[in-house]
Image 1 (cartoon, rainbow, N blue to C red):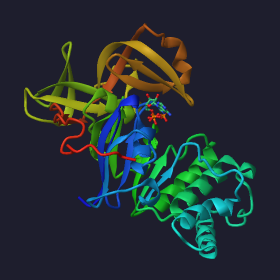
Image 2 (cartoon, protein in one colour; image 1 turned 180 degrees about the vertical axis):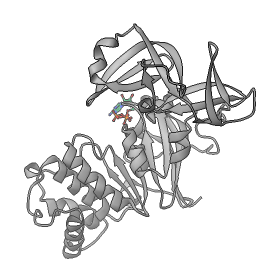
Image 3 (cartoon, rainbow, N blue to C red; image 1 turned 90 degrees about the vertical axis):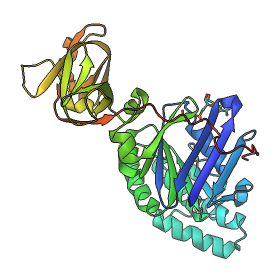
Length: 352
Ligand SMILES: Nc1ncnc2c1ncn2[C@@H]1O[C@H](COP(=O)(O)OP(=O)(O)OP(=O)(O)O)[C@@H](O)[C@H]1O
């Protein structure tokens, strides 16, 4: 495969991952806090002391961090506070041996590209959060990386700033080999060719964006894809969910096979009048969380988004009746292939 192939393991953080991205594709790495996303990106960038593994690009093992051709936008931006904006962005080209004037010209071009022409002489301390993030992006790209790693690039920005940076990233990632670490499923829908899901230091699912987002294989990956996984056995066009509940579905494997549907909570109704287009499941409320002017009600089996005005009806531990829509896409659920970390990579060499 042409592209990136990385194995990064660091026992002290409980992370052991092998992950690849084909040339020109964007992989969105989804995972909750502490699942190891930053650790993996730092390992790929070669700045993680004590990591073992190997990072290959187009088949060739990569050397020390400085010459790797891997650009990392870390979570804290980490701009050099005493350097001007121009100096920050020119740093990469300078480190790669460009003369000052040439490095400055490259930096000006990138600052223009990220919408910050005119701010060259500012210090990072005099920038807004969104501007600082743009500088950090310009700095990562000015080094002309072969692979770009973005760690939570939209975190900590207000809504307008995050929208602007999202639009910029969408434009800059075209045709680039990149990994974006995030816990926002929105970013997977917006940017991903491929999606990998991390849980407790391991990649638990990895595939094309449509495979992982629409047809997750585990409840965990479904949750990261903002869906709920309902599993059961196929019986003549329905998914038998247990407790005598049969959900009419489309597709799916043959009768008797184990299958799943991944339902979005927005598609699920709570309570309400009898409706022949819904199958009802009696459940108990596990959590109720506010989401803008809606509430996400999660039970043991299903979840739904409902209007906030219904907060009084929904008590943790109390009963809830979920109405599941008919005609969801059913797919076969086979056990994932066992893939031991480090498979096919018997030689452990330092990753950094
Ligand atoms: N500097 C560090 N020293 C030691 N352990 C660390 C350090 N940074 C992170 N860890 C640990 O490594 C594990 C993975 O953390 P990591 O920051 O890579 O996760 P993450 O998915 O990026 O989380 P977040 O979304 O919160 O950034 C966690 O158990 C964390 O506590």
